[in-house]
Length: 259
Length: 259
Image (cartoon, rainbow over all chains, first blue to last red; front, side, top):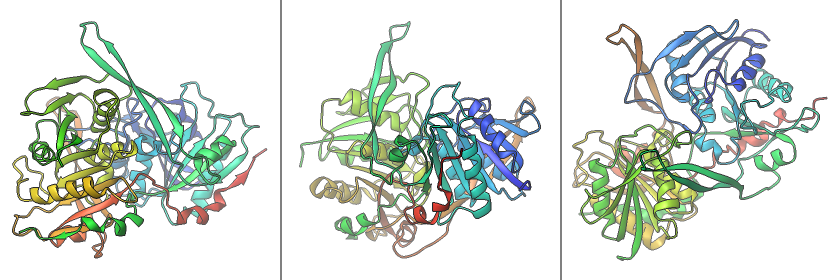
Protein backbone atom coordinates (compact mmCIF):
# COMPACT_ATOMS: atom_id res chain seq x y z
CA UNK A 1 0.00 0.00 0.00
CA UNK A 2 2.02 2.96 -1.29
CA UNK A 3 -0.63 5.02 -3.04
CA UNK A 4 -2.38 6.98 -0.31
CA UNK A 5 -2.47 10.74 0.22
CA UNK A 6 -1.80 11.42 3.88
CA UNK A 7 -2.10 14.78 5.65
CA UNK A 8 0.06 15.08 8.75
CA UNK A 9 -0.32 17.86 11.30
CA UNK A 10 0.17 18.48 15.03
CA UNK A 11 -0.05 21.10 17.75
CA UNK A 12 3.53 21.05 19.05
CA UNK A 13 4.76 22.81 15.92
CA UNK A 14 6.48 21.84 12.68
CA UNK A 15 9.83 21.15 14.36
CA UNK A 16 8.53 18.80 17.09
CA UNK A 17 10.17 15.34 17.19
CA UNK A 18 6.72 13.73 17.52
CA UNK A 19 5.72 15.10 14.10
CA UNK A 20 8.84 13.60 12.53
CA UNK A 21 8.08 10.22 14.12
CA UNK A 22 4.58 10.30 12.59
CA UNK A 23 5.91 11.35 9.16
CA UNK A 24 8.30 8.37 9.28
CA UNK A 25 5.36 6.00 9.73
CA UNK A 26 3.08 7.81 7.27
CA UNK A 27 5.55 7.82 4.37
CA UNK A 28 5.41 4.02 4.30
CA UNK A 29 1.85 4.30 2.98
CA UNK A 30 2.14 6.87 0.22
CA UNK A 31 2.47 10.59 -0.38
CA UNK A 32 2.73 12.69 2.77
CA UNK A 33 1.90 16.39 2.98
CA UNK A 34 2.69 18.17 6.25
CA UNK A 35 0.88 21.36 7.32
CA UNK A 36 1.70 22.30 10.88
CA UNK A 37 1.85 25.40 13.11
CA UNK A 38 5.09 27.41 13.09
CA UNK A 39 5.14 27.45 16.90
CA UNK A 40 3.92 25.25 19.75
CA UNK A 41 0.13 25.41 20.19
CA UNK A 42 -0.57 23.03 23.06
CA UNK A 43 -3.93 23.69 24.67
CA UNK A 44 -5.36 25.63 21.74
CA UNK A 45 -8.35 23.30 21.57
CA UNK A 46 -10.55 23.84 18.54
CA UNK A 47 -9.48 27.47 18.11
CA UNK A 48 -9.66 29.02 14.65
CA UNK A 49 -8.24 32.31 13.40
CA UNK A 50 -10.95 34.61 12.12
CA UNK A 51 -9.92 38.12 13.15
CA UNK A 52 -6.56 38.21 11.40
CA UNK A 53 -4.85 36.85 8.29
CA UNK A 54 -2.92 33.58 8.32
CA UNK A 55 0.56 33.10 6.84
CA UNK A 56 1.61 29.93 5.11
CA UNK A 57 5.11 29.07 3.88
CA UNK A 58 6.50 26.04 2.11
CA UNK A 59 9.54 24.69 3.94
CA UNK A 60 12.22 22.25 2.81
CA UNK A 61 13.55 20.92 6.08
CA UNK A 62 11.76 17.55 6.05
CA UNK A 63 13.64 15.36 3.59
CA UNK A 64 11.56 14.29 0.60
CA UNK A 65 8.30 15.62 2.06
CA UNK A 66 6.06 18.50 0.91
CA UNK A 67 5.69 20.59 4.05
CA UNK A 68 4.20 23.93 5.10
CA UNK A 69 4.45 25.98 8.26
CA UNK A 70 1.41 28.02 9.20
CA UNK A 71 0.94 30.96 11.56
CA UNK A 72 -2.51 29.70 12.59
CA UNK A 73 -3.84 27.06 14.93
CA UNK A 74 -3.84 23.29 14.29
CA UNK A 75 -7.44 23.55 13.08
CA UNK A 76 -6.43 26.37 10.70
CA UNK A 77 -3.70 24.06 9.32
CA UNK A 78 -6.27 21.41 8.45
CA UNK A 79 -8.62 23.98 6.89
CA UNK A 80 -5.78 25.38 4.74
CA UNK A 81 -4.64 21.89 3.75
CA UNK A 82 -8.14 20.87 2.68
CA UNK A 83 -9.22 24.13 1.00
CA UNK A 84 -5.99 25.57 -0.42
CA UNK A 85 -2.97 23.24 -0.56
CA UNK A 86 -4.81 20.01 -1.46
CA UNK A 87 -7.92 21.71 -2.82
CA UNK A 88 -8.86 19.31 -5.60
CA UNK A 89 -7.34 16.16 -4.18
CA UNK A 90 -8.82 13.36 -2.08
CA UNK A 91 -7.08 13.07 1.30
CA UNK A 92 -7.18 9.40 2.36
CA UNK A 93 -6.37 10.00 6.00
CA UNK A 94 -5.32 12.77 8.38
CA UNK A 95 -2.81 11.92 11.12
CA UNK A 96 -2.22 14.40 13.94
CA UNK A 97 0.65 14.23 16.42
CA UNK A 98 2.43 12.42 17.80
CA UNK A 99 1.62 14.76 20.67
CA UNK A 100 4.13 15.24 23.45
CA UNK A 101 1.79 14.48 26.37
CA UNK A 102 -1.51 12.72 27.11
CA UNK A 103 -4.79 13.50 25.40
CA UNK A 104 -6.71 10.74 27.16
CA UNK A 105 -9.94 11.32 29.11
CA UNK A 106 -11.25 14.90 29.02
CA UNK A 107 -7.93 16.20 27.67
CA UNK A 108 -9.38 15.64 24.21
CA UNK A 109 -11.37 18.85 24.82
CA UNK A 110 -8.27 21.05 25.33
CA UNK A 111 -6.13 19.32 22.75
CA UNK A 112 -4.97 21.05 19.57
CA UNK A 113 -3.79 17.66 18.30
CA UNK A 114 -7.22 16.07 18.58
CA UNK A 115 -9.04 19.22 17.45
CA UNK A 116 -7.03 19.16 14.22
CA UNK A 117 -7.98 15.52 13.68
CA UNK A 118 -11.61 16.29 14.52
CA UNK A 119 -11.64 19.14 12.00
CA UNK A 120 -10.52 16.72 9.28
CA UNK A 121 -13.17 14.22 10.41
CA UNK A 122 -15.82 16.97 10.04
CA UNK A 123 -14.66 17.19 6.42
CA UNK A 124 -15.30 13.43 6.03
CA UNK A 125 -11.60 12.58 6.16
CA UNK A 126 -10.85 9.56 8.40
CA UNK A 127 -8.58 10.94 11.09
CA UNK A 128 -6.40 9.75 13.94
CA UNK A 129 -4.84 11.80 16.72
CA UNK A 130 -1.79 10.20 18.38
CA UNK A 131 -0.38 11.19 21.78
CA UNK A 132 2.46 9.78 23.86
CA UNK A 133 2.25 10.09 27.64
CA UNK A 134 5.59 11.89 27.84
CA UNK A 135 5.77 15.69 27.79
CA UNK A 136 9.53 15.72 27.23
CA UNK A 137 10.96 17.11 24.00
CA UNK A 138 13.32 14.08 24.13
CA UNK A 139 10.44 11.58 24.37
CA UNK A 140 11.03 8.11 22.84
CA UNK A 141 8.64 7.74 19.90
CA UNK A 142 10.49 4.68 18.60
CA UNK A 143 9.13 2.22 21.18
CA UNK A 144 5.56 2.48 19.88
CA UNK A 145 6.25 3.00 16.18
CA UNK A 146 5.20 -0.53 15.19
CA UNK A 147 1.82 0.00 16.90
CA UNK A 148 1.34 3.40 15.29
CA UNK A 149 2.08 1.78 11.92
CA UNK A 150 -0.39 -1.03 12.62
CA UNK A 151 -3.17 1.41 13.56
CA UNK A 152 -2.62 3.54 10.43
CA UNK A 153 -2.51 0.44 8.23
CA UNK A 154 -5.71 -0.98 9.75
CA UNK A 155 -7.50 2.36 9.26
CA UNK A 156 -6.35 2.59 5.62
CA UNK A 157 -7.27 -1.04 4.85
CA UNK A 158 -10.51 -1.44 6.81
CA UNK A 159 -11.62 2.11 7.54
CA UNK A 160 -12.97 3.46 10.81
CA UNK A 161 -16.53 2.22 11.41
CA UNK A 162 -19.50 4.25 12.72
CA UNK A 163 -17.34 7.30 13.22
CA UNK A 164 -14.47 9.09 11.56
CA UNK A 165 -12.04 9.86 14.35
CA UNK A 166 -9.80 7.87 16.69
CA UNK A 167 -8.12 9.29 19.79
CA UNK A 168 -5.00 7.15 20.31
CA UNK A 169 -2.90 7.46 23.46
CA UNK A 170 0.36 5.60 24.07
CA UNK A 171 1.76 4.83 27.54
CA UNK A 172 5.33 5.88 28.29
CA UNK A 173 6.80 2.39 28.20
CA UNK A 174 9.58 0.51 26.44
CA UNK A 175 8.76 -1.71 23.48
CA UNK A 176 8.93 -4.85 25.59
CA UNK A 177 6.59 -3.39 28.21
CA UNK A 178 3.82 -2.35 25.77
CA UNK A 179 1.02 -4.93 26.00
CA UNK A 180 -0.95 -4.21 22.83
CA UNK A 181 -3.93 -2.11 21.73
CA UNK A 182 -7.39 -1.70 23.36
CA UNK A 183 -10.45 0.01 21.85
CA UNK A 184 -12.26 1.80 24.67
CA UNK A 185 -14.27 4.79 25.88
CA UNK A 186 -13.16 8.20 27.16
CA UNK A 187 -12.73 8.04 30.95
CA UNK A 188 -14.13 10.67 33.27
CA UNK A 189 -11.34 12.73 34.78
CA UNK A 190 -10.69 16.23 36.00
CA UNK A 191 -7.95 18.78 36.51
CA UNK A 192 -7.35 20.06 39.99
CA UNK A 193 -6.05 23.47 39.11
CA UNK A 194 -4.01 26.11 40.76
CA UNK A 195 -2.54 29.33 39.51
CA UNK A 196 0.98 30.32 40.32
CA UNK A 197 0.67 33.95 41.42
CA UNK A 198 3.74 36.13 41.11
CA UNK A 199 4.92 39.66 40.33
CA UNK A 200 6.68 40.72 37.14
CA UNK A 201 9.79 43.00 37.10
CA UNK A 202 7.46 46.04 37.18
CA UNK A 203 5.75 44.63 40.28
CA UNK A 204 2.56 43.89 38.38
CA UNK A 205 0.81 40.63 39.34
CA UNK A 206 0.41 37.76 36.93
CA UNK A 207 -1.11 34.27 37.02
CA UNK A 208 0.26 31.12 35.47
CA UNK A 209 -1.90 28.02 35.06
CA UNK A 210 -0.76 24.77 36.62
CA UNK A 211 -2.57 21.70 37.89
CA UNK A 212 -2.75 17.99 38.40
CA UNK A 213 -4.95 15.55 36.53
CA UNK A 214 -7.10 13.01 38.39
CA UNK A 215 -9.00 10.04 37.00
CA UNK A 216 -12.59 9.92 38.23
CA UNK A 217 -12.96 6.31 37.15
CA UNK A 218 -10.75 3.43 36.15
CA UNK A 219 -13.39 1.09 34.76
CA UNK A 220 -12.11 -1.68 32.55
CA UNK A 221 -13.40 -0.26 29.30
CA UNK A 222 -11.91 3.25 29.65
CA UNK A 223 -8.81 4.78 28.10
CA UNK A 224 -7.18 5.63 31.44
CA UNK A 225 -7.60 2.00 32.55
CA UNK A 226 -6.03 0.67 29.34
CA UNK A 227 -3.07 3.06 29.62
CA UNK A 228 -2.59 2.17 33.29
CA UNK A 229 -2.41 -1.50 32.29
CA UNK A 230 0.21 -0.88 29.60
CA UNK A 231 -2.07 -0.83 26.56
CA UNK A 232 -2.33 1.74 23.80
CA UNK A 233 -5.87 3.17 24.01
CA UNK A 234 -8.02 3.82 20.95
CA UNK A 235 -11.23 5.83 21.56
CA UNK A 236 -13.69 6.17 18.64
CA UNK A 237 -14.71 9.81 18.94
CA UNK A 238 -17.13 12.32 17.48
CA UNK A 239 -18.40 15.89 17.66
CA UNK A 240 -21.99 15.52 18.87
CA UNK A 241 -22.03 16.95 22.39
CA UNK A 242 -25.76 16.35 22.95
CA UNK A 243 -26.50 14.40 26.12
CA UNK A 244 -29.46 12.44 24.70
CA UNK A 245 -30.95 11.12 27.97
CA UNK A 246 -31.03 14.73 29.18
CA UNK A 247 -33.34 15.92 26.41
CA UNK A 248 -36.47 14.42 27.93
CA UNK A 249 -35.45 15.09 31.52
CA UNK A 250 -35.09 18.81 30.84
CA UNK A 251 -38.37 19.33 28.98
CA UNK A 252 -39.53 21.61 31.81
CA UNK A 253 -37.40 24.32 30.21
CA UNK A 254 -39.86 24.37 27.30
CA UNK A 255 -42.49 27.06 26.94
CA UNK A 256 -44.69 28.74 24.43
CA UNK A 257 -44.53 32.42 23.51
CA UNK A 258 -44.33 34.87 26.40
CA UNK A 259 -46.76 37.63 25.60
CA UNK B 1 -34.68 34.45 44.61
CA UNK B 2 -32.00 37.07 45.26
CA UNK B 3 -29.33 35.03 47.03
CA UNK B 4 -27.41 33.26 44.28
CA UNK B 5 -23.77 33.68 43.28
CA UNK B 6 -23.62 33.96 39.51
CA UNK B 7 -20.48 33.95 37.36
CA UNK B 8 -20.90 35.72 34.03
CA UNK B 9 -18.38 35.43 31.19
CA UNK B 10 -18.29 35.52 27.38
CA UNK B 11 -15.96 35.35 24.39
CA UNK B 12 -16.76 38.68 22.72
CA UNK B 13 -14.90 40.56 25.44
CA UNK B 14 -15.79 42.51 28.55
CA UNK B 15 -17.22 45.46 26.61
CA UNK B 16 -19.60 43.49 24.38
CA UNK B 17 -23.27 44.55 24.56
CA UNK B 18 -24.31 40.87 24.83
CA UNK B 19 -22.43 40.56 28.13
CA UNK B 20 -24.24 43.60 29.52
CA UNK B 21 -27.59 42.11 28.47
CA UNK B 22 -26.75 38.90 30.37
CA UNK B 23 -25.59 40.81 33.46
CA UNK B 24 -28.90 42.68 33.46
CA UNK B 25 -30.79 39.38 33.66
CA UNK B 26 -28.36 37.75 36.11
CA UNK B 27 -28.46 40.53 38.69
CA UNK B 28 -32.15 39.84 39.26
CA UNK B 29 -31.12 36.56 40.93
CA UNK B 30 -28.33 37.60 43.28
CA UNK B 31 -24.67 38.57 43.35
CA UNK B 32 -23.04 38.75 39.94
CA UNK B 33 -19.28 38.47 39.33
CA UNK B 34 -18.04 39.09 35.80
CA UNK B 35 -14.73 37.67 34.53
CA UNK B 36 -14.33 38.15 30.79
CA UNK B 37 -11.58 38.48 28.19
CA UNK B 38 -10.15 41.96 27.60
CA UNK B 39 -10.53 41.52 23.83
CA UNK B 40 -12.81 39.62 21.44
CA UNK B 41 -12.03 35.88 21.40
CA UNK B 42 -14.55 34.46 18.97
CA UNK B 43 -13.54 31.06 17.66
CA UNK B 44 -11.06 30.32 20.43
CA UNK B 45 -12.82 27.04 21.24
CA UNK B 46 -11.60 25.38 24.40
CA UNK B 47 -8.17 27.05 24.24
CA UNK B 48 -6.25 27.57 27.48
CA UNK B 49 -3.14 29.64 28.11
CA UNK B 50 -0.28 27.49 29.37
CA UNK B 51 2.86 28.91 27.78
CA UNK B 52 2.57 32.42 29.14
CA UNK B 53 1.29 34.31 32.17
CA UNK B 54 -2.22 35.70 32.36
CA UNK B 55 -3.12 39.23 33.50
CA UNK B 56 -6.21 39.99 35.50
CA UNK B 57 -7.50 43.45 36.44
CA UNK B 58 -10.52 44.58 38.41
CA UNK B 59 -12.56 47.12 36.47
CA UNK B 60 -15.27 49.49 37.60
CA UNK B 61 -17.17 50.17 34.40
CA UNK B 62 -20.16 47.90 35.07
CA UNK B 63 -22.35 49.72 37.56
CA UNK B 64 -22.70 47.92 40.88
CA UNK B 65 -21.02 44.73 39.63
CA UNK B 66 -17.68 43.15 40.64
CA UNK B 67 -15.94 42.70 37.32
CA UNK B 68 -12.53 41.61 36.01
CA UNK B 69 -10.91 41.77 32.61
CA UNK B 70 -8.51 38.97 31.76
CA UNK B 71 -5.81 38.65 29.10
CA UNK B 72 -6.56 34.95 28.63
CA UNK B 73 -9.18 32.94 26.80
CA UNK B 74 -12.80 32.44 27.92
CA UNK B 75 -11.81 29.10 29.49
CA UNK B 76 -8.95 30.84 31.34
CA UNK B 77 -11.52 33.33 32.70
CA UNK B 78 -13.59 30.52 34.21
CA UNK B 79 -10.50 28.81 35.66
CA UNK B 80 -9.38 32.10 37.27
CA UNK B 81 -12.87 32.81 38.60
CA UNK B 82 -13.16 29.36 40.15
CA UNK B 83 -9.60 29.02 41.51
CA UNK B 84 -8.58 32.59 42.36
CA UNK B 85 -11.35 35.21 42.46
CA UNK B 86 -14.11 33.03 43.97
CA UNK B 87 -11.78 30.41 45.43
CA UNK B 88 -13.65 29.45 48.59
CA UNK B 89 -17.14 30.28 47.43
CA UNK B 90 -19.87 28.16 45.89
CA UNK B 91 -20.82 29.38 42.42
CA UNK B 92 -24.51 28.59 41.85
CA UNK B 93 -24.47 29.00 38.11
CA UNK B 94 -22.21 30.14 35.28
CA UNK B 95 -23.76 32.11 32.42
CA UNK B 96 -21.75 32.70 29.25
CA UNK B 97 -22.66 35.17 26.51
CA UNK B 98 -24.89 36.46 25.19
CA UNK B 99 -22.78 35.64 22.16
CA UNK B 100 -23.07 37.81 19.08
CA UNK B 101 -23.73 35.02 16.56
CA UNK B 102 -24.98 31.43 16.41
CA UNK B 103 -23.46 28.56 18.36
CA UNK B 104 -26.03 26.03 17.21
CA UNK B 105 -25.15 22.71 15.56
CA UNK B 106 -21.40 21.97 15.34
CA UNK B 107 -20.54 25.60 16.11
CA UNK B 108 -20.46 24.56 19.76
CA UNK B 109 -17.05 23.02 18.97
CA UNK B 110 -15.48 26.32 17.83
CA UNK B 111 -17.24 28.49 20.36
CA UNK B 112 -15.38 30.27 23.14
CA UNK B 113 -18.77 31.10 24.71
CA UNK B 114 -19.78 27.46 25.03
CA UNK B 115 -16.27 26.31 25.92
CA UNK B 116 -16.30 28.68 28.90
CA UNK B 117 -19.64 27.27 30.00
CA UNK B 118 -18.37 23.72 29.47
CA UNK B 119 -15.30 24.45 31.59
CA UNK B 120 -17.54 25.53 34.45
CA UNK B 121 -19.67 22.40 33.96
CA UNK B 122 -16.50 20.27 34.26
CA UNK B 123 -16.09 21.91 37.68
CA UNK B 124 -19.60 20.77 38.62
CA UNK B 125 -21.09 24.24 38.19
CA UNK B 126 -24.41 24.23 36.29
CA UNK B 127 -23.74 26.31 33.19
CA UNK B 128 -25.59 27.88 30.31
CA UNK B 129 -24.16 29.37 27.14
CA UNK B 130 -26.42 31.89 25.37
CA UNK B 131 -26.06 32.98 21.75
CA UNK B 132 -28.15 35.29 19.57
CA UNK B 133 -28.22 34.63 15.83
CA UNK B 134 -27.05 38.15 15.04
CA UNK B 135 -23.36 38.92 14.57
CA UNK B 136 -23.91 42.67 14.69
CA UNK B 137 -22.44 44.70 17.54
CA UNK B 138 -25.80 46.53 17.52
CA UNK B 139 -27.80 43.31 17.95
CA UNK B 140 -31.12 43.55 19.83
CA UNK B 141 -30.77 41.54 23.04
CA UNK B 142 -33.93 43.05 24.52
CA UNK B 143 -36.39 41.01 22.44
CA UNK B 144 -35.40 37.72 24.08
CA UNK B 145 -34.59 38.96 27.58
CA UNK B 146 -37.77 37.51 29.14
CA UNK B 147 -36.87 34.07 27.77
CA UNK B 148 -33.28 34.32 28.96
CA UNK B 149 -34.61 35.23 32.41
CA UNK B 150 -37.03 32.30 32.37
CA UNK B 151 -34.28 29.83 31.43
CA UNK B 152 -31.94 31.10 34.17
CA UNK B 153 -34.74 31.02 36.72
CA UNK B 154 -35.76 27.46 35.77
CA UNK B 155 -32.14 26.29 36.02
CA UNK B 156 -31.72 27.92 39.44
CA UNK B 157 -35.02 26.56 40.77
CA UNK B 158 -35.08 23.07 39.26
CA UNK B 159 -31.48 22.44 38.19
CA UNK B 160 -30.31 20.90 34.95
CA UNK B 161 -30.99 17.15 34.91
CA UNK B 162 -28.63 14.39 33.69
CA UNK B 163 -26.06 16.90 32.55
CA UNK B 164 -24.62 20.21 33.64
CA UNK B 165 -24.59 22.33 30.52
CA UNK B 166 -27.16 23.92 28.23
CA UNK B 167 -26.41 25.37 24.80
CA UNK B 168 -29.08 28.04 24.22
CA UNK B 169 -29.49 29.74 20.84
CA UNK B 170 -31.91 32.56 20.14
CA UNK B 171 -33.30 33.36 16.67
CA UNK B 172 -32.96 36.93 15.40
CA UNK B 173 -36.61 37.84 15.77
CA UNK B 174 -38.71 40.50 17.43
CA UNK B 175 -40.43 39.73 20.73
CA UNK B 176 -43.78 39.16 19.04
CA UNK B 177 -42.23 36.75 16.53
CA UNK B 178 -40.47 34.51 19.10
CA UNK B 179 -42.55 31.34 19.53
CA UNK B 180 -41.15 29.94 22.77
CA UNK B 181 -38.48 27.47 23.91
CA UNK B 182 -37.68 23.93 22.63
CA UNK B 183 -35.32 21.40 24.24
CA UNK B 184 -33.57 19.54 21.43
CA UNK B 185 -30.43 17.87 20.08
CA UNK B 186 -27.44 19.34 18.26
CA UNK B 187 -28.09 19.23 14.49
CA UNK B 188 -25.53 17.96 12.01
CA UNK B 189 -24.13 20.80 9.95
CA UNK B 190 -20.97 21.82 8.21
CA UNK B 191 -18.97 24.82 7.09
CA UNK B 192 -18.19 25.15 3.43
CA UNK B 193 -15.01 27.08 3.71
CA UNK B 194 -12.95 29.28 1.51
CA UNK B 195 -9.90 31.35 2.15
CA UNK B 196 -9.60 34.85 0.82
CA UNK B 197 -6.12 34.97 -0.69
CA UNK B 198 -4.47 38.36 -1.01
CA UNK B 199 -1.14 40.16 -0.84
CA UNK B 200 -0.05 42.44 2.00
CA UNK B 201 1.67 45.86 1.40
CA UNK B 202 5.04 44.05 1.16
CA UNK B 203 3.59 41.76 -1.51
CA UNK B 204 3.62 38.75 0.81
CA UNK B 205 0.63 36.41 0.48
CA UNK B 206 -1.86 35.89 3.26
CA UNK B 207 -5.02 33.86 3.81
CA UNK B 208 -8.19 34.89 5.60
CA UNK B 209 -10.80 32.37 6.64
CA UNK B 210 -14.34 32.77 5.39
CA UNK B 211 -17.15 30.36 4.73
CA UNK B 212 -20.82 29.53 4.75
CA UNK B 213 -22.64 27.25 7.15
CA UNK B 214 -24.97 24.52 5.90
CA UNK B 215 -27.43 22.39 7.85
CA UNK B 216 -27.07 18.69 7.05
CA UNK B 217 -30.43 17.92 8.63
CA UNK B 218 -33.50 19.77 9.73
CA UNK B 219 -35.22 17.01 11.71
CA UNK B 220 -37.88 18.14 14.12
CA UNK B 221 -35.92 17.50 17.27
CA UNK B 222 -32.76 19.45 16.30
CA UNK B 223 -31.61 22.93 17.29
CA UNK B 224 -31.43 24.22 13.70
CA UNK B 225 -35.03 23.13 13.14
CA UNK B 226 -36.23 24.85 16.30
CA UNK B 227 -34.43 28.09 15.38
CA UNK B 228 -35.80 27.95 11.83
CA UNK B 229 -39.32 27.69 13.27
CA UNK B 230 -38.84 30.70 15.54
CA UNK B 231 -38.09 28.87 18.79
CA UNK B 232 -35.22 29.37 21.20
CA UNK B 233 -33.24 26.09 21.19
CA UNK B 234 -31.90 24.49 24.38
CA UNK B 235 -29.47 21.58 23.86
CA UNK B 236 -28.40 19.61 26.97
CA UNK B 237 -24.69 19.12 26.30
CA UNK B 238 -21.65 17.32 27.69
CA UNK B 239 -17.98 16.60 27.19
CA UNK B 240 -17.88 12.87 26.44
CA UNK B 241 -16.85 12.59 22.79
CA UNK B 242 -16.89 8.77 22.74
CA UNK B 243 -19.03 7.33 19.94
CA UNK B 244 -20.27 4.32 21.91
CA UNK B 245 -21.69 2.23 19.03
CA UNK B 246 -18.25 2.55 17.37
CA UNK B 247 -16.39 0.82 20.22
CA UNK B 248 -17.49 -2.67 19.24
CA UNK B 249 -17.42 -2.03 15.52
CA UNK B 250 -13.75 -1.02 15.65
CA UNK B 251 -12.49 -3.92 17.78
CA UNK B 252 -10.36 -5.07 14.82
CA UNK B 253 -7.91 -2.35 15.81
CA UNK B 254 -7.11 -4.37 18.96
CA UNK B 255 -3.98 -6.49 19.22
CA UNK B 256 -1.69 -8.06 21.77
CA UNK B 257 1.97 -7.21 22.15
CA UNK B 258 4.03 -7.01 18.97
CA UNK B 259 7.26 -8.86 19.67
